[in-house]
Image (cartoon, rainbow, N blue to C red):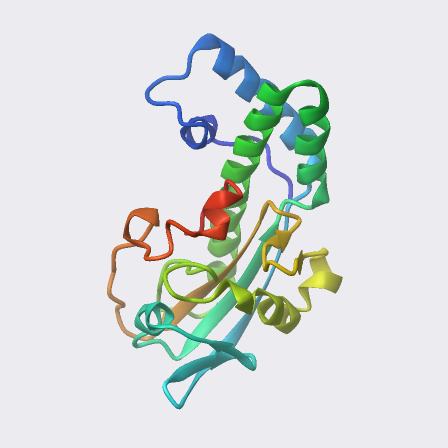
Length: 219
């Protein structure tokens, strides 16, 4: 996969810009976008699996997903997509190298990459659901969101063989490495699924969220 552009308006939002970015910020974002488009090589993998419900917990591909949030998210679903997306280590390298000489550019790169990984998630989801039979589906629900423990990341990645297939691993803190990466569960149902509220504003883990601390979001 190759990105040809990145949403600079979304990146500006990550930077905390309200309204239209001024000229200096726009130029920084233009420069950051150009570097990311030229050097980053996004990848994704996925698996469609049956949902197993045992003793009030959910299991997918042998991985146990705990918490009321994921149970509610997958209500009425009998299958799910396990998705892993990464911008690759090149994104982290760009941000790190810029930080040595130009912190403003480093921040712009960080925010462009955060916007880019969400774009790749959207592209991946669109491509996946063009290939598989899925009458209805939920939105993406990531480890660390709501009350789903982020500690499930390692098992999640092993279920997809992500370390070998796309070089995506989890640190001891369960943060993804490379950092500009996302894992998510998407439920599949034969009947319409409820459209519940989502986002940081309604997440019970927003104050201690590892994703937010790293400048990313789950969606």
